[in-house]
Length: 307
Length: 267
Image (cartoon, rainbow over all chains, first blue to last red; front, top):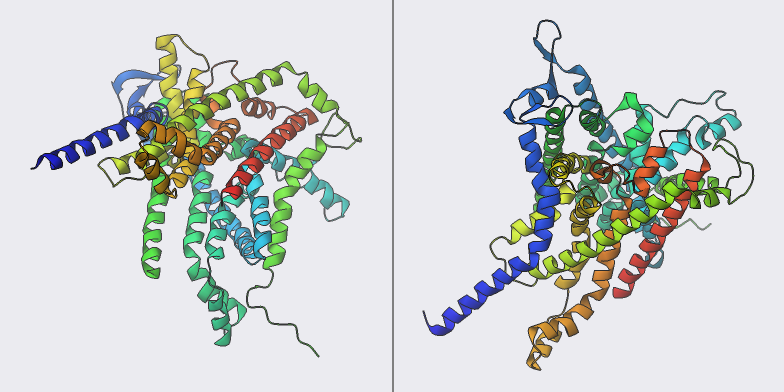
């Protein structure tokens, strides 16, 4: 190796070392106050629960994980399926799925509408979607609560119109959770869909009509396949936060319509079962990982299809 | 007779759904704001226009405390996150791929991949033990937690700007015998300023809005405005909470608008 090569190599090494030093504050902060604690939580999920919360440190137990899915019979100590947990997990998955469908049904036409506006007005429509997106989630949930509660705008209007004579009980039901999540997460569906549809080559639609396709066929055979990356991205962006929703079910669903996020919180509050709470959190993370994997697989496949 | 031209771009009913969506997006927020000007004690009836709930919120000590705490935390978190994110963006762009680069991307974006409630309970587990060991239970924990989840948001615009930045100006500076440090201060940093401001504002809004992580990390008496509001929602609420929400809403809308215009000018 010549001297010049050696010098270049040393310079490159120094450059990489500097880059590590430069990124250290960000990496360390995230490690200490976000990523690292997840590992600690994994450890905690395998410990014996403390009598008043916390854990008995260092005492190994799988009880936390077992009780995510099963419960011991009070009398004969046999294991049965933990039905209460199962129904809450199932509710979370079901409601997240419905939320995704609802936001899709509302969000797709909206994104399409924005993308077909004249160029100079598009920005304004996008801005109108962005404002609620950046508005505090709690405030939006609270706004929804005021609309759907028994003496809220919705019920008052329906009574005034004479459609119903008694308020509909929407708040503190699963419907309230669903409406709340749809309302709060809708911008997350519209924005990626818009980004996709905006890039659509509308001459392809003309070609479709020239070949005697009707409106529905053009939509199904041309538009939807071409904007599939946006459809998938929007769906995943809505599905994942819905699965981990905590504030919305707490405010709108009430105590009887808990979702997984509230069940986790309960273990750290009144439940005083930290290992179980930790195991549930990791289960929730597992669901999110599965959703992300499905996304990555689909995204790479549809990407390859267009190449 | 003239037939209306067949428009290949429209789909039947889409315009209607879109307008309904916009209506549905703004109706609840609009109603929330309208009721903050309500004279009545309760949210169930409208007694005429009044500013009394803004006045009463202003004089409410708990609200004042929580607002100041929110602003202090958001300022610290946004400043720290923006500095860390700017450094990290400089370290991860404009380079050949090197060992560990993917790891850095993954770690910086990690807070975005995990549901907030999971991060929140993990922090509760760790910080509650640290609080017992060290005896310190001040705002430091909240500032640190907020900084961590604000970093990916601040990082995003700064990295994007660096990647699209022209290298020739920096080379020219180097050719004119500027030291690397001087080049950075006089050329790179001014070019980067809009993205840094944008990153700072994103981080600030994200920190200001946080409920879940704050709720789990805070010690007693450390309510921020969002956790204070969450606590109030359990009771029968008065329009005072609407007044607080309206002010909050106005503040974040202004921040988003500034962010929007900075971005637009850049293009």
